[in-house]
Image (cartoon, rainbow, N blue to C red):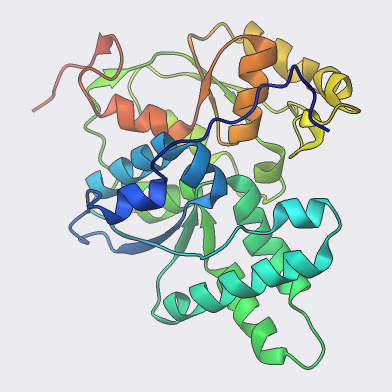
Length: 286
C-alpha cells in the first residue's frame, strides 16, 4: 500500500491536453515544427509545466502539436508487466511513426518517458515476425529528444534561441534526474538556464530516491528517504533560492524531504522571459 505520510502528486480538473486543444499559444513555425510528448504527469498532475514548455517553444517560433496516445509504459515495465508495457509501446509507436515519416522531431517533457521511447521501445517491440513494427520503433527512438536537448540542439546551437530574458532568478540548484543521465546527452537544462543573465547553476547529481512508485510504498518509504539524503543535502548546501529538476517525482521528493519546491527548468525559462517572473529585473538592451 501507499505510506500514509507520502506526499503525492495532485490532480487537476483540466488536463494539459484539454488546455492545449482549447487554443494554446503557437509559434510561427519559422524555426520548424515539433511533436510534444507531454507525459502522464504533465497531463494530469503538472499541466502548469506543460503550459510553460509551450510558452517557451512558441516564443521561439516553433509550431507545436501533441503526439502519443498512451502512457509511455514505464510503470508497467517497472512492475515487470511486460505485456502491458508492450501494448503501450505499440500504441505510441503507431501514433508517432507517421509524424516521424513527415520529418517531425519528438520532444519529450519527462526524462523517464524519453528514456522509454529511445531505449526501451526498440527492445520491447523486437518481436519475432513483426519486423515492420520493430523498424518503426527504431525510427521513433532515433527521432526522440529530451525537451531541453531538443531546444539546445535545434535553437541554441543554431543561434536561434530567444535570449530576451526580462528577469533573473540568480543562482539555481539543479538536481539531474537519473533517467536523464542514462541518456548520455549532457546537461542541456543546465546549459539553457545558464543563458539567463546572472544565473550560476550548482549541479547535484545524486538520486532523490523516489524511483517511480518505490517511495510511495509502505515497505520502501523510509528506505527512499535514506537513499535520497545525499541529494537533499546537496541541494540545501547549494545555497540557491531557486531549485530545479527535470523529473516531477524528484521534485516531490525534494519538496517533502528537503523543504523546497523544485521547478522544471522550462518553468524557470518561461518565468525569466517575463518582467515579473523573478524579483530581479534585467535591463532591456538595444
